[in-house]
Length: 289
Image: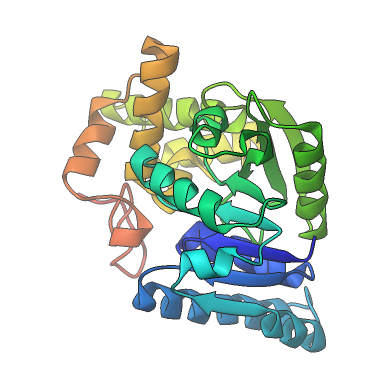
């Protein structure tokens, strides 16, 4: 496997593209929006620069990786030479269906198709193609270049060959892996969604402030980030979408907290909008009012 194409240049897509290029792959990062690609290129350049400054990667390695990384606005054209395509578009089934239908027609027959979903069914996504045995989920974690795990999720039709090839590719990207069978929310998303939702119920009930709840979870349970910090990072709208899906598929224990719904309706989505549980438009990043 030599060539990886990443579809979607948002936070996850650009992180995956960085890791793939640093891992020695020839990479194309694809997005239909030119501005998004420019933003992604600038962010990836920043990650390389910080990595060199911190001794995580040498200047020579960074330059070689950047020479392997290309940016494209044409998904079908990029897909033609791919060995592995990783989709990182929003968690919307209709969008994913359109993407995988087009990729299946454009990509060579040997190409594996992976979805970077945190909750959705690789079995259903595979049904949008004529190669369901080559479709799998690769659940990366944010920030991709720092988080060591890729959760590999087999669909009902996924072949052993596909699982092994994707595991090897993730390893070359510097990632640890777990391979699990499909079930709504997989492993990590079910746990993370429940913890984040419960934190919102605690906030709604007045158990403590966001700072106190985050501090308690970090120091008492040894989490690297508190549930509100993490929610603001991944996006409260993304957290709500995941909870809605888990509520529909797994039942009442995943019903989204009304306070979380209220934050999303108010446009307080987290870091990407400048306000979530915390206010990132102030110097100290205090709690939003």
